[in-house]
Picture (spheres, rainbow, N blue to C red):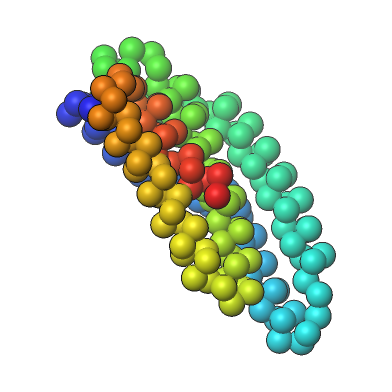
Length: 164
């Protein structure tokens, strides 16, 4: 579907998933702890969820700006071996990948809320379903013979994970 060199680029960009997951600044883990504590004391934790949403919104805006500013410099180094294949598309590809993977990091906050509410099975089910949707999207593209580039492949596979 992508070919050997483009798949290598796809793999390198997928490696950014772990780094971009840090965009939540630990908000999800902290929120999970506060919710668990409030549940143990039979207190409302709605204010914590609202605060986490506000903080995560600020974090994502901050990182979007940061990724936009530094994508050119970082992508030139990170994808330097593939300059001929990408033909000056490294910056936008890197930026798009970071946006998609950041949405997964922010979306993980919802999973932490579900775990804190002792319905972690729902979080795991949603996560598995979202990856299945992405994989089905790629299979659809493959079997329909639709020509795709690296960016579209990343979006089709990982955006459902970030949106759920």
